[in-house]
Length: 183
Image (tube, rainbow, N blue to C red; front, top):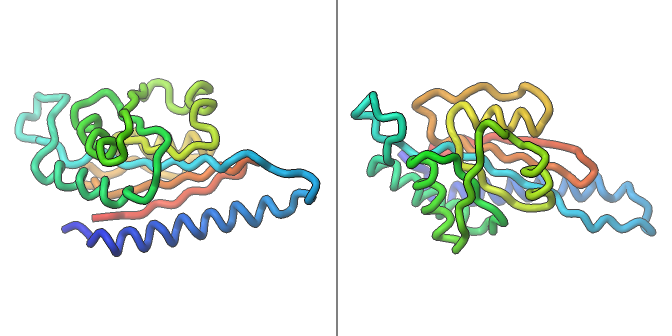
């Protein structure tokens, strides 16, 4: 069901290395007298882990046992990625998923409003930072599309809990994205 932690980390580290190399190469075109002290902004988007669907009337369900295991697995996957911020929507399932990851990094979970996807305050607060956003099957693709400025990604299927969107925004405004499926 879940990939082994070491396999996932190898893929994630390789992907991050490639993206960082691309970003560094794009900065080499600057004159040597001009030093760019700005850092790349990196966003990681995951959907909340498996939720309890027994009661169809419950609009704010808790995680299932499988969901708790997935959130623990995400914490292991992100062990080597020191997040500056961890954001969650204001639902039990997203806050629980984010909290398990935040506890592993001794960070606090900050809430975001899906009605303010990537507003100016969010952009300013996260510029040059490494950020995890725990959201939903519809909000994550919307959020990523908003950052990219294009309609690249569609809503996830209700069964998809393993998509990891990675978005990089270089100091010059160049944007790139990648999706990994970790199931």
